[in-house]
Amino acid sequence: MSIMDKLKGMLKGHEDQAGKGIDKAGDHVDDKTQGKYRSQVDTAQQRMKDELGGQQRDIPPHP
Image 1 (cartoon, rainbow, N blue to C red):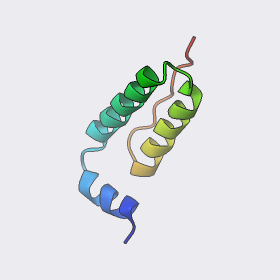
Image 2: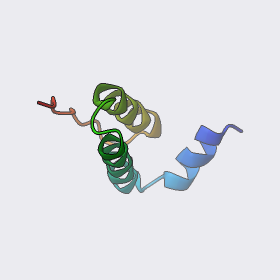
Image 3: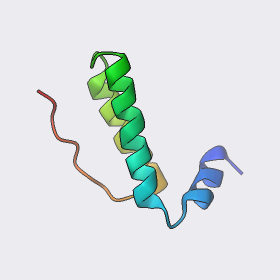
Image 4: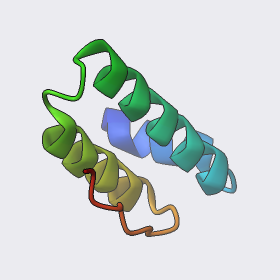
């Protein structure tokens, strides 16, 4: 059993909370890197949400 399978099992039924955590972690990385890797962070956030089966949300473009 892979780590992702274990995570999916633990988060089952809590996809919205997981999505909020992913957003918060990505925002923290953006703050620490002063937005230097913003597009990569946004892509990683979306892929994690897709992988965990949470609600798909469009990420708004950053100015």
